Length: 314
Image 1 (cartoon, rainbow, N blue to C red):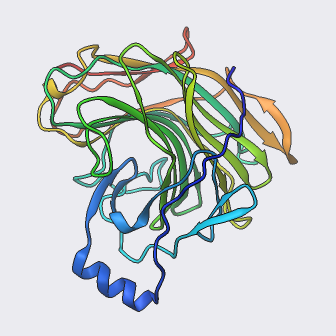
Image 2: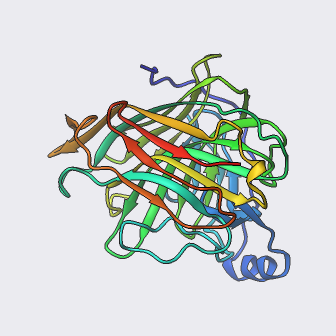
């Protein structure tokens, strides 16, 4: 089990403010869309936060009791975000794509998720470079018509326009639909390292988002505060293979598969700290979105291992 820990960093990039009209004018003239784990978002709406910082829904970034940054609402409309699923959504767009996913809803609608811990191993390096690969577990809070936010510890291969290259890195993301995206400091990892993704409720509207390299003990995380009016997190992703940029199947890891082992999942009822262990009792759905290139995508839930299995061929 990983510890819920709270080291703090000391710096953060401040984004200059200004009127919404000025931001919109500048955005339309200089929009630079980048491929994130939630699709294409303008660079001006993607924000690095210090390790262990707390982000609130008003765009404030806190280091302990000190306000270190404030980010106004994202002024550039998103393109290519397609997280909407579970019968609520649309056909995935051409960019920012989930190729494979294994997901579940709570055992009852009145018991949203409280705690998710997923373990997986960093795959081999792809034999050919050029792809941008995201592998992650996560949580979303769905309304009746849309998704509101997503929290996700993410393993990345390739360059997303902010960091990365021909190596594996990991970071923790929190993103508001059509709003700002926040990520913790990215760290390097390597093939064979054992990763733990942790999403842990710490209060009625407070979450820990942490990505831990359990081989080295290094972790990167942020604390995420939701609005009281938002739905609670009611859709869990045990494992997602997202490929914003790929042209050939030989740009994928030669392992041809990855297991996301479900260490522990809790739901809560009545109050956030009244929990029910549902680690072995969720009904998992496996989805292949049928996107190109066709690499024989084959997601499944392997009950004997209590794990999501994502498979492909080169």
